[in-house]
Image (cartoon, rainbow, N blue to C red; front, side, top):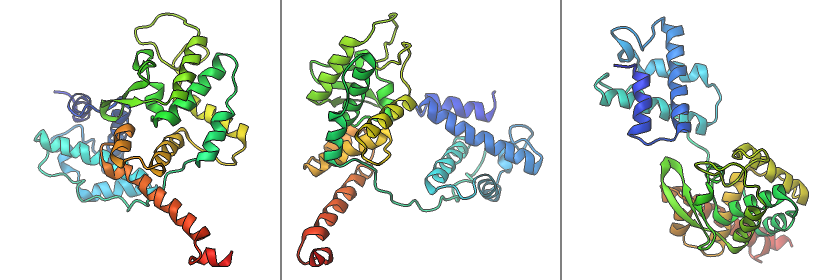
Length: 305
């Protein structure tokens, strides 16, 4: 029988259907804990009779306090979740009787509203996209598609040519947990994709042809997409930084402001829970309150004007 950590890795891949990025993140946290326990207690929990059975909640509190002082609550929540999942797996395997991580809680998360571009700035950004060669048409297609569909940047760079149906105006997306959804794409994005694919050098035939490729013919990375967006923002001088995820936020916020149904937005974004999508409702309420305070005669701001 292999190590507990090795078995946990196989469980995440086969039973939980977790992405390889999630598996790496979880195993990194377990590896950090193992190293900490070896250094502080002088025992390797992967070896010996007691193994992981001897780990207590107090040990875990010491670990999180020593390794991650002052980390953001969202970061701590992810790390605690990874450790809690590992011990839950050990319980299910009969290796331990109780989960020492269940009493470990992360600091309360601050509710942060998503960053997004107002509609007029978003339109200025898209209008500013230059034409030209393959790079320019590719960059325009990327930004048009991100805003038109609300894709995560990881979903975008994972798209294959076969995932795009320009005739129907849809893309097939493999999202979190490898869940597949079909997302509609607007006419402008379809035109931008057609132009890009017409300009794109074919290169070598591959089993799975990445939709967006770098100039050497390899698949584009999320970091490259962030650079493309930064260049576009500098071009229109909007005076703000925005990550590619901000285009996803802009997509959802603008749909909600235009009266789209929250459930439909949830489906397009690929959110497992409606509560995640409801963040955009808070953005919309915040937007309405600012408009009220600046314009209504009974508001404080309105009385000053």
